Image (tube, rainbow, N blue to C red):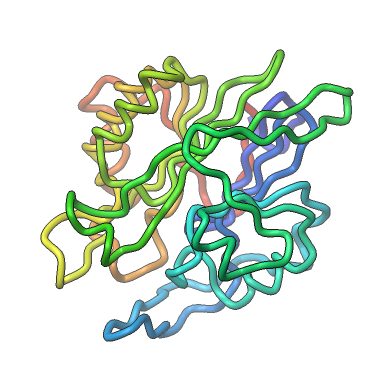
Length: 259
């Protein structure tokens, strides 16, 4: 269903960015609003291949931002940074919170933050691990976090951030599986200087969904940048091969679904 009110609505904005409404609380993942172009990152240049479909002023009121990390422009760009200034709370890694200041708050792994819901309850946001690349590359790619959303009467939602490790997924599944919805960052991002994917490929994402026993899956961060080696055309076949195609919601930019 599209554009409907439910306990959980996800609107895919492109890249890692989505508006997530859960239990009346409005969240944004990794806000990115800049146009296509070249984005220098140390000795590399990341190439964005498509414009953002919306700007910071079009998002509306937000209760919090779930920021997986701040060190890469495909997860937090100039427009996203400006957006954070008007957000009452940004949950992220300790290093990102230190760099960003303002309303940014570190959410360590397995710790919780409670966000008030309009109905008088609370939304629990739990920080969970993420590994942005193969084993042993954390000192290059930097710290990243994921999130689990839960609460009385609410679906349990896993937001992966830029994670490439199925061992990390297994650790999260040990605590939270089955999850109702897995919002998985995909794309099999690559860095020529590193041997291995920086984010989940399509087959690995399908395996992650199985590990989590996810009832439904929404992909993010699989298109719009040249460093992705897989995308829309590989996700659906991988989930079909795993027998999980009925659980997959491969949204178009701007599309919203109620789950």
